Each structure stands twice: as structure tokens, then as C-alpha cells.
Image 1 (cartoon, rainbow, N blue to C red):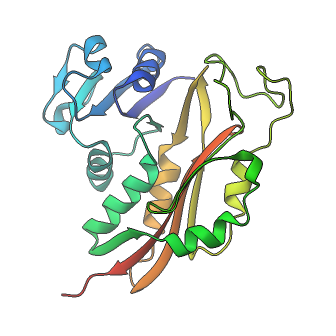
Image 2 (spheres, rainbow, N blue to C red; image 1 turned 90 degrees about the vertical axis):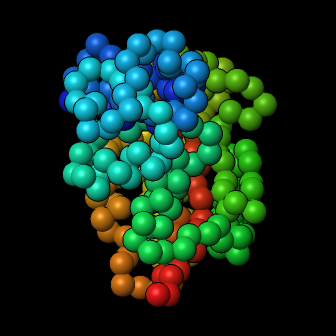
Length: 236
């Protein structure tokens, strides 16, 4: 499939894989990373310091990935696909950034995290970080995934049936507002989320409520990440 605009959050190993997969079938690819010497910088000759001029071709933008994504979306420039390739929960970072610019204070919610963790099958829990309200789920526990895996129902490494992660996260209760994005393979080993869906979910965020809970995550068939947060309207 060909795309008009793809946004890659992170210029490390996976961001560079995504860039190489997209560069010949996308009119505009923007890779964002804070590090001017990131791996993607070796593959991208053009560094773009002014986002408004990154209109055609492949560019590397130096800066905070979540902040850049929020900035261009506020301008009405919505990527067709977004490739999360930075450590942590990039969609949660984007939502937190957007909400902070709306005048909200956003913080991890350990209590909500604990309540929700009871609903998740422990055999797919890879990491639980209560302090940051984040949970990582995976079918790949104790082994490394095949980098060319295309997400089949049977794991090509273990030969066992995969426990689908996406429906687990979409069925988690307790959150006032939940946004879980399905990751789709655009190439073997490279997953992306729908940029228009991300923007639509951002626009659904409550603006008039003083306090509410929020869980944001990304998941494919095999893996997933979700962060539980509390949003409070700042006074003054």
C-alpha cells in the first residue's frame, strides 16, 4: 500500500526499519528523534529544522517525538500512519502532551493500574510498572521474536497458539476514557497505527470535566502496552 504522509516516532533501530520500508511508497516520511546522531540520521541525509517545510520526501526532524506529533496535528496535518518507535508508550506521551497544552495536569494513576491489572491474564504480562502506571503485554516471554514475523495465529518460534492482546486491552474496565489503538503490519516487523484514528480519539478527550481517568495503549495480536493516567484541570 502507498501512503501520502507517514510519521515515524523515533530514529533508532525500529524507526530506521520503518523508514526503509516506507521511503519508496510514501510521498512524505518524517522521522522524529532528539538525537542528531540516531541510527536514522545515517540513512537520512536531509535534516529538517522547520516542520512547515518538511512537505515532500524523507526528512529527519530533531526534537521530542510526542511534542512534534501534537504540534502538526494542531495545525491540521494528520499523518495517515504513525509508527511508534521510541521507548515507552508513545501514544500515551502524545495524549499527555496534548492534554497539558489544554491546561490539564496528567499523571500516572497507580490505583487505577492496580484495579485494571487484575483483569489481565498473567501469562501475557511482560512488565508491570506501577509507578508510571504502565503495563507491557507480550506472547514473547523468554524468547526473541522472529524479526520477519507477520503476526500469525500460531507463533513461528514456539509453535503455540497466540493469545490476542488487542481484545484484552480494549476490554479493560475502570477507565473514564479509553483509547486503545490496533497496530497493523505495514511490513514484516514494522507496525503502524492509523493517524486519523489517533486524531479522532484525541478530539474525543473530555474538555469540560475537571477530573477523569484515562488509559491509552497500542496493541497488535502478539504484543501491547497500556498506560493508566489521571487528568486534572489546572486552576487559573
